[in-house]
Amino acid sequence: MKSYFALILAIAVIIGASFLTPMINDYVLGRIIYVGIMISLAVSLNLINGFTGQFSLGHAGFMAVGAYTSAIVTTYLSVHGFAMAGFTGIVGFAVALILGGVLAALAGLGVGIPSLRLRGDYLAIVTLGFNEIIRVIIQNLDFKIDGTDYIGGARGFSVLPITTFTWVFIIAAITIFCVENLVNSTYGRGFLAVRDDEVAAEAMGVDTTKFKVRAFVVGAFFAGVGGGLFAHSNFHITPLDFTFLTSIDIVVIVILGGMGSTVGVILAAVVLTTLSELLRSVPEYRMIIYSLLLIILMITRPQGLLGPATMERLMRRRRTGDQATPQKPLIAPVEG
Image 1 (spheres, rainbow, N blue to C red):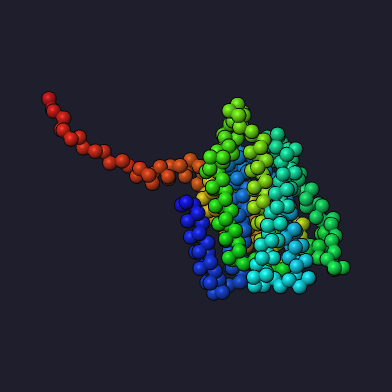
Image 2: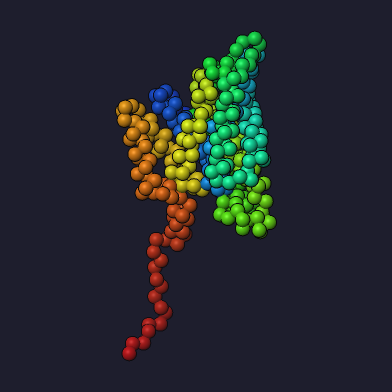
């Protein structure tokens, strides 16, 4: 019940904050929207890499499926006279995002069933290959909508810029809510069992393959929705927006935030995305400084900004206090 109340409160705060967005510079607002999209993508990948203990490098592939699917749907609706504004536009955009998420989830199922008997580096290579397969397929597709090219492979896709602050952060809140409730439920303990000791989990009767596939499907769904938001926050997308480097960026956020820590991943998404943007003022040194800061952080905080151990310690302190005050005995001890 507390989690539902927190979600409702978060959505209310987001809607209230959206009234302040007209006072924000368009460029700054665009960067804030991008931070919100990265939060959704990182939290969804954290379910796979952090809570279930897998190593996926194909998140940008799921993102691409959702991006292009939702872009095609909204373009089709626009061409056929459905106004992308008002209630009709809200419904159309919501349908486009959901369809993008569903197709991305099917892609996650497709890559999950044959490959999730693999572990570690082998699984990472398979998901990386999947990412590149999706990108190459998109790059060589050429669809037409009523005789007009809207997706031209390497030429890219012209997208209606519909994404707003409200859409992005409400979906980020829903992503966090769903992942946290799933992991902390009785059923969700299976994901943690797979991460902690897959052999022991199988010995206890846990179907580890089923849990790994479901983690991929849920994570891919929210990656597809995030990809739809990304597509509609830009005027134009190309296959180069979804290379394996995009997957690496999301993986770095999850690792630096703390594998299995939702709060840490959110913090890392905000910090790293903002830091990368601030370093644009020194383009010749940007990647050097950024890489050095990442190295320093990994040396000093190998468990991430807020790893699971850190969060457990903070929760324990909140329950018991930093130092327990010893109680005085009712009867003083007799000396001598």
